[in-house]
Length: 111
Length: 110
Image 1: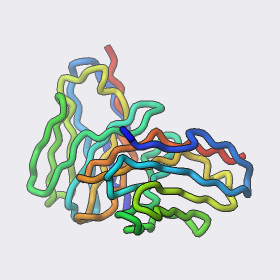
Image 2: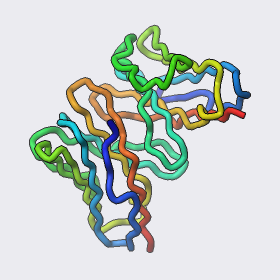
Image 3: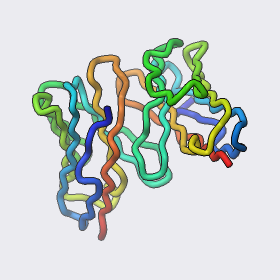
């Protein structure tokens, strides 16, 4: 596609539920990042893929968070047993030459 | 570890200049700069690599001093379109993750 696509754009869920957020990067981009951004804060690093493998997952806050990129293109961020503190905008970005191209984000609200 | 940006916020009149600083406690390989407007995704401005180089984007330029582990972004003759939050993103080594600072909120008034 022309840009990074993220779905859903908005997700409202109840505490304790499971959520999946999808990122479709720019075609051919080998690097893919997930960030989380709360209001008034900078993007917080979660995980970074090079191809299919997670090059660095040190930003995942705990084992409720997991991300995959099985074919080196689309990635899914999975959050189990959601908590109110997980509410944020989840940003995905892809890259091939270093500069990151961001999607519009998925706004997650946990009630 | 998150880089430190200063100031946290700045208000300018159109045509005025401003400097945003980004400091890291660790040695750096490169520094990215991004701008985010309210309700939108961050947009890439420039990357600076080791070597003290300067780069420009419109009338926005930046410098990188790897010895001081810091980068500065210069907004020259600011325009209304420069309003937004600016984030620096240092990288410690090639292929490493990019972490962002807390951001500097810039408001340019007519």
